[in-house]
Image (spheres, rainbow, N blue to C red):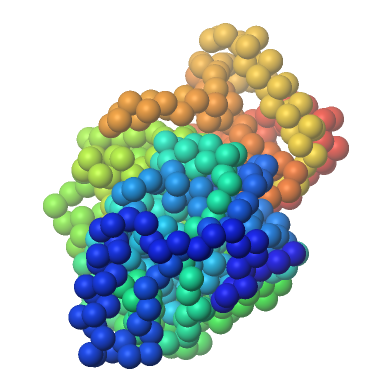
Length: 600
Ligand code: VG1
Ligand code: CO
């Protein structure tokens, strides 16, 4: 294994001044202009050194970027090959532009940042804007790109996957609106990875990322910025901070936020404690760690176990929340109560008047296909345009850019709005705080505080409840997972409308295909689904974010408008349809798994 850093450029083949004439001119004029001021120690012309390389198999991005074992990313040229392929895919349009850079603080992030900075310099970018210590939450990256009108950004994260030398690293690209790269770009990157032969590095020394400020190398500059500032400014445009602050000061309110030792720690400190006045004791595990302290930074009922214990304990706070490795996911809990992410997006949409950013109403709402239909009911009651997209946030971007979607969500703990182009964990927390503040406006302190569960009950009483559950079977043998999917495909092929599966009657069964209503692009093969006559659904998908084996996701949904059922446990309510799903897929037979790794 060899890492590139400083001047240790592996198999150097040639060294040339930066080729683009515009860029060279800029180098001269900018550097001479700055000579007299800040640049005394750093003036030199950036030269590009080309390093020979060879294609590496399997650098195909999944649902959200490229994720592999950290050791794989640390092997010679692995990261550089992918980043260089991205720059080739983007072509000349990157010359002279500014690229944002940051990550979730996981192991190898700081070294990776130095490699990416050199590649950016060698490929003609004029400036890098990077979060201090190479930290940027995914939503903060999106906000930074949008506020500063940057060309795009690279995020060094494998999101909710565990980190450390024996776990995962990852990288993804966000484009100029702050959105995850669309498939048209990721497909091109993959093509480039298959034919790459040279890496172009700027000949620079490593940059100190621990201090806010600008380091210049001739005309190429690296600006280290506070990781929270721009994002906080965006959030202040969305929420009423003074109102939230006065609500959180109520003696009958308390919350706990679990940073899971991931990137949101510094954000929670700054936003919840310093801005909104929450006591320090409301923060749990808010010190980022390169290994997430050995944990799995996935905010669900299984991996955020300690938070779950607190919220199901005596003296549970009013609200509990957690976010994932890179801060784009969220889990919202009440006192002995779990809000499913599918319900969360529906309830935020239904209560949008509590959020100043939405005061003139919602433009439309969207959810990913496996997400429950709770949002559909809100959309139809409020007569809002509604969209159903494939899994992955990249599909929401076009809708938002076209002004057709204000709030969207995924069942996988992803919730967000069109203030940025990523899902946003802190947004969800502030949205729920806003709903509580709004509902408690006329409840005097010491009166009966409207809590998270009350909001949910009120919602279900109005719209009915979409019971929802997801079963994840992680790290299943890939061939076994393929057999399960083949089996499900066979059942689909032999299940025309009217077929009975258990006590459920098939209305439609297919492999979900999405035609983007804005640009007409087609995404096929996005999940095998059964929709039954009573609106219940069974869906099977293979995960596109894992790094070893395959993960099967089975999604189950059933609607009820019987108020006596609303408080029922989802597993109990869904038991009959779960049984049908397991039988039709023969999952246990093919995988040998008697139970899932995670149940949501
Ligand atoms: C999962 C989720 C999906 C989410 C994606 C990225 O993808 O199901 O809804 O958008 O992760 O989230 P998959 O292909 O494993 O099912 V994150 O927080 O990893 O950026
Ligand atoms: Co994430």
